[in-house]
Image 1 (cartoon, one colour):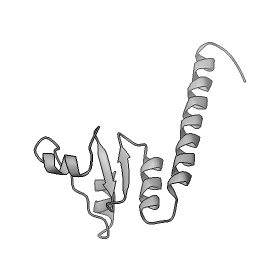
Image 2 (tube, helix red, strand yellow):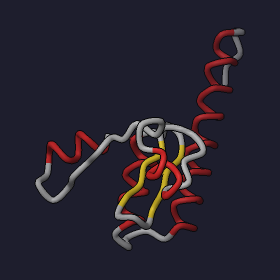
Image 3 (cartoon, rainbow, N blue to C red):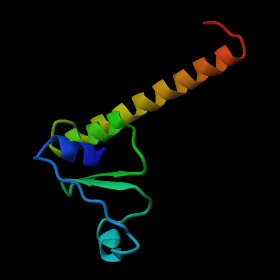
Image 4 (spheres, rainbow, N blue to C red):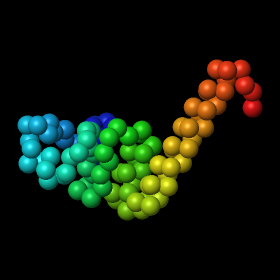
Length: 97
């Protein structure tokens, strides 16, 4: 996603770093899991993120959203996914809503 934004806008740059080859960077950014996305040196996303969450993190990094707002949004995404999963599961078993 970061690379797609960098292609779309000359105001965005993106670098991909192999943590094994650059352990000093992995230590600097406290990489625990991959991917780890660092936005403007202030905002971090560890692990794969759905596009809406990634965009929320970008908005957080420029001050449009607070960390609390992003976390609330993440909870909404999780709830929606659980609802969709439950709804799909009910249809698999012939249940109607």
